[in-house]
Length: 203
Image 1 (tube, rainbow, N blue to C red):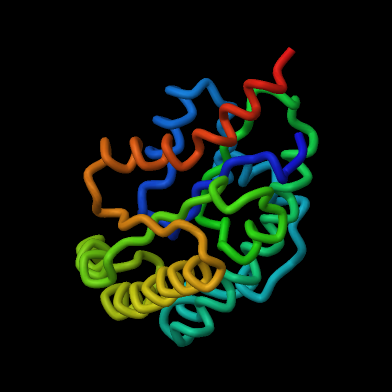
Image 2 (cartoon, rainbow, N blue to C red; image 1 turned 120 degrees about the vertical axis):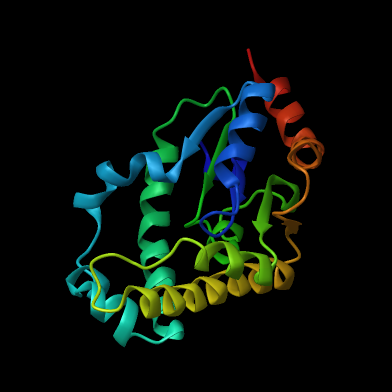
């Protein structure tokens, strides 16, 4: 499948991209490609990274939030290359919908056929902070509570990066806290043109 025809739903972890994509794909009869479902297959195809060599304390206690963001951006670029390889191996029909936390707007825009083929779920920062801190200490670290605080600040930078990239590229941003049924309706309306066009191409 040509990646320029694909539909995309991106957003930071915990924003609800999986649930939204599953609902839209089921209702529209789309192929669903979840990046997380391919993590094991991707692992041997990924390059060695600084993050992979670090201890939990190095990752969540010694690192600053901006370093955490840099690790995520670097890892997402490598994963996105593999996602594109996978998509090109898919059948041309039905149309594919891709979702995942690695789908930063800048990467998606490079292969996007049209702006209405992508949307990004972005949580409210304060609500996200509250949810993440409620997860409690990060196990495997020497100070789990402080590690959680640090990791949360990193996650908030990731969310801010998603929001800023999408706005700069004039791509659709949806508040992740909106009612789920409303998100499904908005996504279906957003993707209607591309889904209809794909149906017109079917034999």
